[in-house]
Amino acid sequence: MQKKLVSICAIAALFSTGAFAQDEEAARYDRALAAGYKAQFICSGLWNGGKTLADIKADELTGIYDRIADIVPALAEEVDETARQVSVRFADDAPPRIAVWNHKTGCTAMPIGLDRAAAQTPVVPRELSDDRPWPMGDQNAVAPEASRSAALTTAAERAFESKTYGGKTSALMVIRNGQIQAEKYKPGHDLHTAQRTWSVAKSIAGTLIGHSVQQEMVDIHAPAKIAEWQKTGDPRAALTIDQLMRMSSGLISDTAGNRTDPVYMGGASVSQRATSWPLLYRPGTRFRYANNDILLSVLATQAQYPEHQNSDGKALPEKHGFDPYGFFQKLGMTRTYAETDWQGHYILSSQVWTTARDLGRLGMLYLNNGQWNGEQMLPENWREYVSTPSGPQPQEGKFGYGATFWLMNQSEGTPKDTFAGFGNRGQYLVIIPSLDMVIVRRGYDSSENRFDIEAFTRDIVAAVQS
Image (tube, rainbow, N blue to C red; front, top):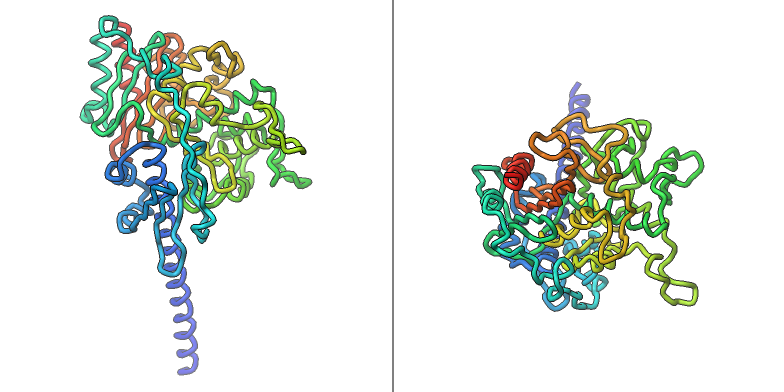
């Protein structure tokens, strides 16, 4: 009996030790994620956003995921202004997490364990167009005061009253008839301050895919060419970019769908992580909002382009490369950064940094049915495509879904053709073609205090129509 009791105690001790090891490992991984998150946001906030470190810590590093919220403030950062790198150490026996800036794609989070020397990259200034006339530049962007509506100005400024609409507004802009009719920023921010778009990046992804369609490089209704799915018999090989853009892939993942922690914070690549999930539903039958679907739609779009160089090393014409930077430069969105993982895959489900004015320019592109400076940047029917529901729709909430854009056609007091990009922490790009109007609202909202974009849009529309 005594031997049996000793044996049971020994087994219990083994289980206890194993549980402790698992808890310790999980805590270490959370610290690694927190360090990656802090390095990435400080890097992007400083050199994409043009913010101070104090503002980044007050706005970007508060109100964040519960998983890392208490860890982030306790980790010390090291900022290298010369090399444009940020390092954050998470353990004494491991290299620090590193984020590195470059002028085209902003900051890249390096994988856990990467040596600092391997992350070196030359620092090159970015080409800006501030001195050009609006909308390519910032000159004469704001409508003359005599032509601006006092009712609209008053309604727009109420976005900064938390008691009215909620949230923590950092920037507000209303564009109508091609000029800015209202514009305001919180202290410490201005027209050149960039913020992370969060999921408004999904709408930017849809726009870039549209540009690829216009270039005749991509067929969104053909099977997506994801390399990891091409083995014989893989049912995912039949998925289309259209299904991915509409959040109807049928794929499952380990979270509710709108979290991609290993890619966003852990230094994993898109091809490693997003391609690994199996089908749970027949494609095109169920709506499930998911970062992975957008990551995969962009990965598939990139895959349909040929290599960037010929065999002789000479660069191919521009249309032969998936090039967000070049696209943004053509629109005057010269302070917009589409960031990538360390293997060069774009993280266009969330990781774009841009200004309120640059988002306004993107909205104007849709008002112009995809034409810009005499060039057709999107297919003429692309606005109709992204703003038209097709297939399964969200079962909860007030809004429908098109293709990378939300639909506000059921919102009272809002024109039926209203569609929008929505992002975490209160990022909104609202496009109303029938009123020739774009509304941009940026914020640092928390999950407990969200901005009511439906009520705000309704009040702006009322002010315009009064």
